[in-house]
Image (cartoon, rainbow, N blue to C red):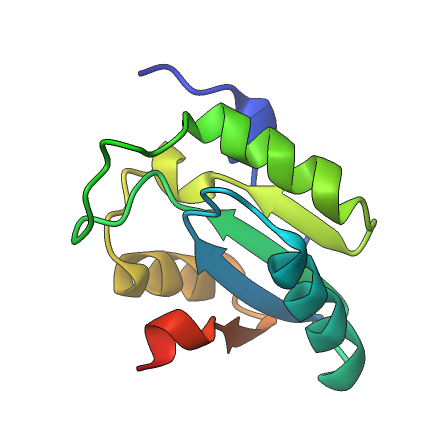
Length: 124
């Protein structure tokens, strides 16, 4: 599968920025996801939130998973906030597990401070 750089690009980052990482399949993205991202920006004093749209959780069934590009587009349309960046960067690097994504991000963006955001469905 060839992926467009438009959907897999790493969002802007830099020294001293605090960035929330909100990963998931977003299948479909909904108002609750937008609310979590907006509230985290405000309450955690984040400079940005990155929605990391997963190519597919390796532990879940993908039979009803919408195409990645469609999920990225829907997330961008719903969030429409210049401080919320939607990316499928994990697909560009064939990351299947969160730990791989986190290790790569910390190495690639060493002066950016990341805050992990997760939904209650995965917290349990």
